[in-house]
Image (cartoon, rainbow, N blue to C red; front, side, top):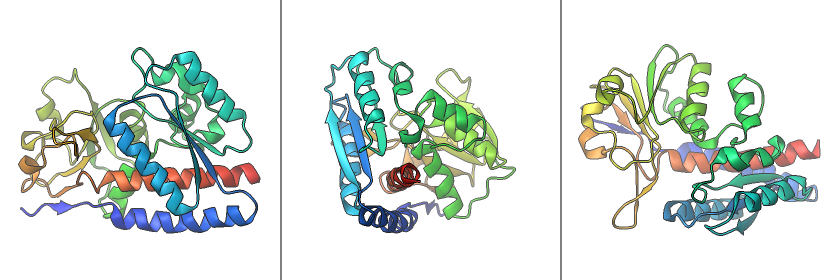
Length: 283
């Protein structure tokens, strides 16, 4: 079987074209949209992502302030910075990069981000709005999975989707978005018994656990669609996903590549969220 590559380049380009036009309109109105990137980690994969966000913002006419608090920052320091940016009228959007320093979880600090600026949808309020089906910003990576599937005309209604990973950043919000598309969702995690048996029963498998090569050919049934959300640092310094692509190709009907699949769409959606936040603030 030929495995189709579900690239995100075309979709990301379309989103970016719209975002650039809307950002220019905001700039002409007197203020370029402004994103504050709060960083408290020295994780290499995170550094790569933050750099890509900076470049994307620059290309699209979005001002981007990167605040590096250091990998030893305390929860109080992080909360204080998030609260200050939330109160700053010049800041339209806030993103807190993960992972956070040891002993600090998103739950400990994300409530300091006001929902109207929480463009990656990580605060308890944003997640609650999503779970309730109400308007708010949703985590961009989870949104990117759904948008990429739609772009490639892969139906979701009535399909069984296995999501491997239960984080508040991807797994849980993705399950909510998939349910809204009338998919049947199974969320798997580190304590799921016989993971291959669960995932190989699904029409679509989404790997979002942050472990290199976790999903292999034995986890995928013939003709399934596989979405790789992973961005892990490989031994050679490159970025690789959660899927062992070589063992999946030829068995899966389609596979999103890493890099080049979910990543570009996630970044594009996050930039669009920034502009939406700026537009909402001006209303």
